[in-house]
Length: 319
Image 1 (cartoon, rainbow, N blue to C red):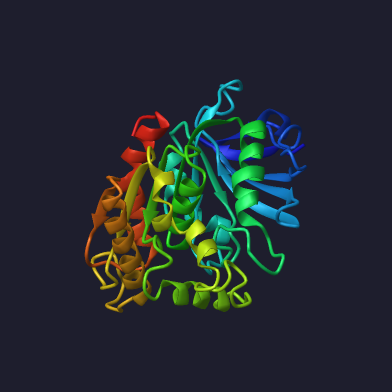
Image 2 (cartoon, rainbow, N blue to C red):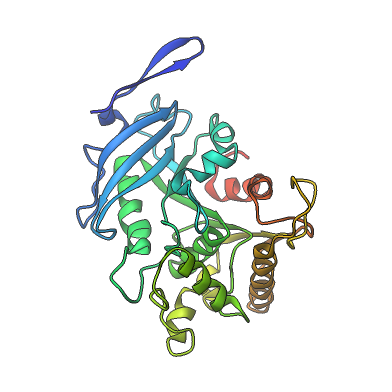
């Protein structure tokens, strides 16, 4: 059992043991995935390690616990999944490393879940190579552990940046009704639009992954690509509140220099393609295409806060 003490209000306050938090005693998925360690990093910030059959090993998750988690031990909490982007060294810690989400959620009764997608797992089970099955892990194992071991409720929302924005919309589309809302910040929302398959494979290559190991050849295995592509799975997004934002790659007020960032332009092209198809399909996402802005964290922090009223409304909590 894990017991942590944190400095709070000038004195030491004991964090309840893991049996009270859930975790080690009952956070077990149907396939045996389970929590094998817990460590409080700060008050309400809990890092856990899961032994996962889908991942073929152990993988970390960072949780931000609700404000009243310990004083309301029988309450189930609305849950927000926050997804990181490609090739991010901070991995599952990136949202707390580069934004103020820890402070933002400190006084909110929302359970925040920040899992790992590796360097370029693309929130998918790979078609070839037998690599980690991120979708099975996130959607089945992790969800069951969160709801059985950490009192997450069935009120769920999901948000992500860059490849994490793709992941948020792909998961919401492929698992209709699982998430009440989804938000994408500079996401790759149409992976079959012109040039997008090349960008996907380039990112995978940068992470050391074999060519076409994810979804196969984009021409010969187009059906597999389409099955994961948010813009090809719009029917699955009906009834889900959607937030979409993106810049155009030009430096603006939140940048420290005037460098152009091509990744944001690529994200914008896929986002615009998605929006065109979504509107033709009768969907009405909340959209903020804000013009100048690069593929960097200050914009994603701002857009997360802009999207929070939509996410909070879907979760049934005050904004």
